[in-house]
Length: 423
Ligand SMILES: [Zn+2]
Ligand SMILES: [Zn+2]
Image (cartoon, rainbow, N blue to C red):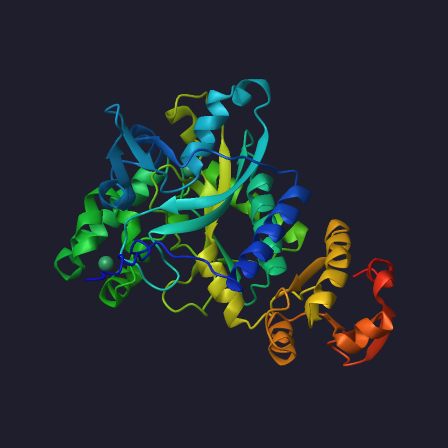
């Protein structure tokens, strides 16, 4: 009996990004590198696995991430490692470990890469998901918060994401938040029995999180809840006003939403989200805020920080919904017939590729018709046809696929022809 070998599929919640969609990802990544670079950010690359304790402390014991979503395992040496569930803790660890926080506290980093959370997979939300994020460390100025928002706003628009709204809030600080939390808790206790199970759990640890529960009954119940601004201390209020002033000065539109809260423990004062109504209930495209206590809690000095992160899967869904066309292909496709033509064009193709021109062909293994079909499927800008007739004359037919216009070029002049017209 001839048994077929087992077929493999990707791990649940860990998806392949196949062409042509991967081109959209490259476009997003290129926009991030370009825009972040304009704001003085440098790329930082941290390992995918970290000591588990880093995330326990950096993300927070009582968060859903640490409690039930991390990929934690013991390595062969018996150390507990975790696949990073987010980027900030690792960046701050590297910032401290490298000594950067002592020599040059003001640092602007951006990162991009896969993160891992074992959640229920759904559209735009994978267990291995790709995040792009930025961290601005060493400044407590509210202008820094606004600058991060301005940068993300520019990045989103250059990526092709339309219909995105910036929503801002302040979560207060360790001085004023406790009194808000106490008031909120007292309010919620009155109708505890009507809250969803998740919110009942949130009550004692982080009552603020009830405010952004997606459950309709919870949203209805919290309508008359205490409002954050009523509890801000003077410092928090002044910080918030300065953020708004800086956003206005930079021409960045925003709306205020006092219900934006954070699942991560280390956020304080500024919290913001870029939201869209185009992705159903998962309305946040990017989220960020200020985390002044984090560097110290991970073993550094008292260095403030502000950052933002976004999931590329969701961003790509949004861009696709906006029907933003894929980047145009500056591609030359060689349609070649016969063995002689094959070897006539081979040096030409090689020269063009060495000159940085994108060239495709199918090694002349298929019919003329199917090669032409492949060329248009690949969205080639130009098709070069070399068949028996052309070989006899020593020329190639060069066809512009947009205009349909066709003319002849001597085969040996092809490299010069394409490099001159600056493809
Ligand atoms: Zn405060
Ligand atoms: Zn709820």
